[in-house]
Length: 207
Image (tube, rainbow, N blue to C red; front, side, top):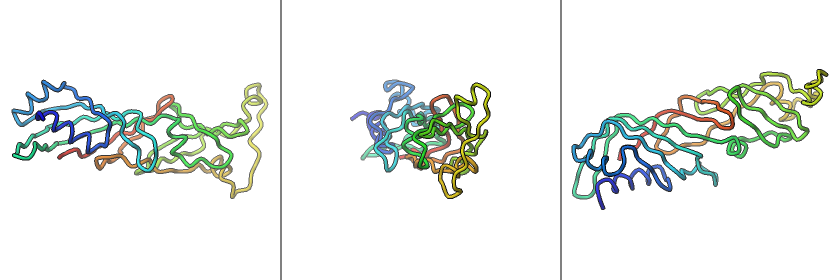
């Protein structure tokens, strides 16, 4: 097995991915490895599982800088100065991962925040922020009946008992943990996009 294939296999095992694509490509990377130092390697991992679920990340991009290769009789190993990552989760995945309160059947994501869609068709708009590994959502506007609100009739969502999860969400918001990512990943930021979120941070892929 070539040096590159051994390194690629080690990264796939570490990330538990189906496959990993590299930039620079294999031949250039293998040649660079002979010098025992690679300044920068970009990777895209496909099929990385999400802990305790049957889901896989929609996308996982990593950038490893200052990679130093160590050769031995057994197999090459490598040390990485720093690895940053960007993991993408779709709104469908989040609807599965987030513990939705009773009365909410799905959520959608926009650049402004999360929208929780109730079974009655009433959207609850929230802003989203990151606190450690938790995503904290807070109502950003009163919940309205969409059709009536559209034509100018201002009707708030009916008040529910305080113990109701839906009432808790519409009045105070909620928080939930992001899934554990591989390679001892530490999440630093949450980026909202239309239809998906991207979490970024640092990871450890040294072998």
